[in-house]
Structures are given as C-alpha cells and as structure tokens.
Amino acid sequence: MTTSKNVLANDVEIKGSIKFSHDLIIDGKIEGEVISDGSLTVGENALIKGEVKTRSVIIFGKVEGNITVAERCELKSNAILVGDIAAGTLAIEEGATFMGQSQVGKKAETKPAFGGAAKQP
View 1: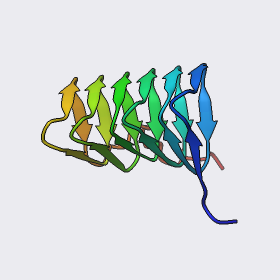
View 2: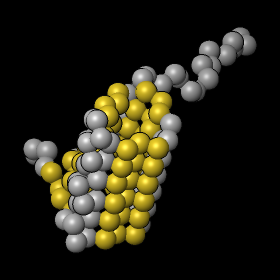
View 3: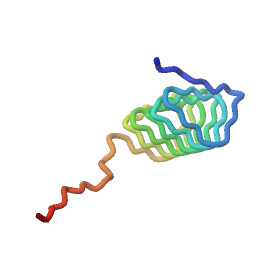
View 4: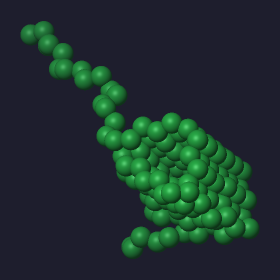
C-alpha cells in the first residue's frame, strides 16, 4: 500500500490523543498528544495544545507544547511555537515565532551500556 496523507480540516476539533502511522495534515484544533512514526503538517489555521511526538513535523500554524521529532522540525514564516523542541535537524524561517528551548542533533545514548555479566562456571 502506498503512503497516504490524512487530513483533519479546519472545522475539526479534538480533545484527546491522536495516533497515526503515515502522514497527517491538521488544520483544526487539537487538545492532547499527537503521536506518530509518520510526518505531521500543522496547517495555517491549526492550533495544537499538547505534546507532539512524531518522525518529522512542518508547522505553518500554532503549537502550544513540546515537540520531539526523530528527524526534522520546520517552522514556517507564520508559525508560532510556545514550547521546547528536541529534533535531529531544525529549520526556522524568518518571521516564525519560537518561545522555548531547542535541542538539535543526534541524541546521546541515554541507556546505560551494560556489558555482558561475567558468568560463573
């Protein structure tokens, strides 16, 4: 099956978590977590209040919450982000508003490296 883009129009309002696996374009209002292994596009009319955890995100609208993406985060010229970003790469166009902290680049391994325990014969 080919990758499809799902669209939530600007008259859609959701309170609760959203999970999806491919690409999603949101132009409505979301209050809650947005979680995915896919790409998220936040449309010009969109407002997301909550955490965003996806593979990549492009923001044209407004997000109030922290963003964690494995790959790329783009803030377009009319974007407003109030929250922190953790991303592999970050692109911010002139005119975008970003209030928060950013952590960009490959994350250090957070799990402690456990070597093989010595086995007693």
